Image (cartoon, rainbow, N blue to C red; front, side, top):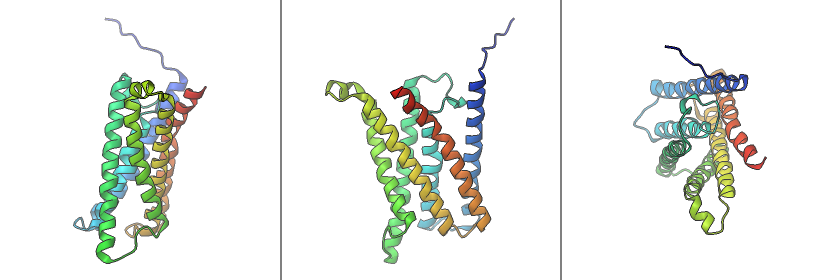
Length: 221
C-alpha cells in the first residue's frame, strides 16, 4: 500500500517550530511558578490561590486561547472554524473565571487585613486586565451571534476586530501584571530566577501575539 505525503512549505515548518517554542516556554513558566509555590507556600492562604489562579488564568488559559489564532498551532490542524471558536470560548471563559476568583481572593485578603486596594502598579494592572478580560468575553458572545448583529445593522467585522484587540490587551496587561507580581512579591525566587521567569513570560507572550496580529492584517488587507 502506498503512502502519500502532503508537502509542507518552509513557511509552515517555520510556524510549526515557532509554536513549539511557544508551548515549551509556556510550560517552563507555568510549571516553574506553580512548583515554587507548591514547594514553599501555604495552600490554605488566599494569597497563594491568588497567584495560582491568576497565573493559570492569564499565563496558561488565555495564552492558549490567543494561540488558537496562530497558523502553526499543530494541536488544531484539521479542526474546523466552529470547533476552534468553541475551544477558544471555553479557554476564555475558564481564564476569566480563574482571574475573577483569583483577584477576588486577593481583594478579600486585603479587606481582612484592612489594607488599601489597587495602590501598586501590579494591582492597578491586574484590575485593568480583569475588566478587559470580562469585556473580551462579552465581545466573544457578539462574535458568536454575528448574524444577529448584521441584521441589526452592525458589521460583524468590527465586532471581531474589537474582540481581538480587547482580548490581546487583556492578555498582555494581565501578563505584565504577573511580571510585576513576580518581581515585587515572589519571595520564593532569587533575583536571577525572577528575571528568568519574566524573560520567558515576555518571550512567549510576544510569540503568541503574532497569531492575532496576522489575523488582523488579513482582515484589512
